[in-house]
Image 1 (cartoon, rainbow, N blue to C red):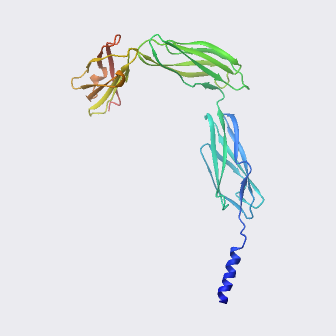
Image 2 (cartoon, rainbow, N blue to C red):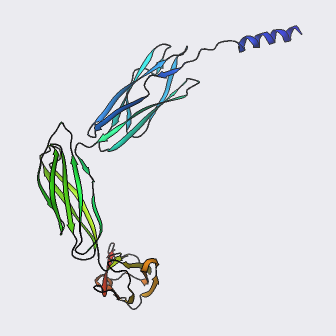
Image 3 (tube, one colour):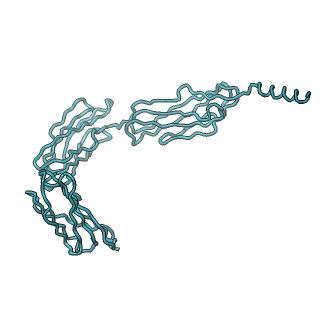
Length: 322
């Protein structure tokens, strides 16, 4: 009985013993750098403090995309001491809201990992809104307008010296200088030519030291009496096997039409026509084989649509000759 009593007293003593442990603390774990130019890196130093009673060990530091650790003054931090962790966030080429995280792995039993974040907004030194001008679907003769804003920083005023467009039917209607670093440009297009996708660009010559020439893509789709997709039937030159391709014909400027006939350039090509919802048709072409003669051929589609009684789709052979 006496032996059991002694053992019991020793266990009670161990259970009641106060064990010294480290405790990691950071006063500002989240650093917001606000709006910044995207031509630089943002540096910030986090201060990690040991508020425990034994040595705090930083066993590992992991970073998410964009954030790197430049310097750590101490990975072993005594009670009451601090360590400086310098992080760098590369904003080059980034735009919009940004957030990156450093994860510290420690021997703190109550906080095995500690997250430090850097967040803010990456702003291009010269912003273009929108970056692509899309007019969408338009009918022949229809005019549409869009606006583009060029926004710089107040610290660097600039001027727009000259504008030009590279697509038929597109022109610059006006240029408004809202401030010495903020311009609004009115752009219009009047669709003409062959139905399908039309692409071009708006070019601006400026006095900005970093952006003397801005090129902004512009696109529109001219919808004729009918809309046909794709614009060409593509086959791989090296593919010796027979393949199947599809062509879809939809209402454009007119609501109702019929496909009267589909004539392939090769009698071996089989044609099937299927009706789709909303008055559209799908043409199935089977037993297609790429050969030199097909590269110069077209698929003829005859319809009841006024102005598009005959549609010719070219064949395109792509790939190497080997």
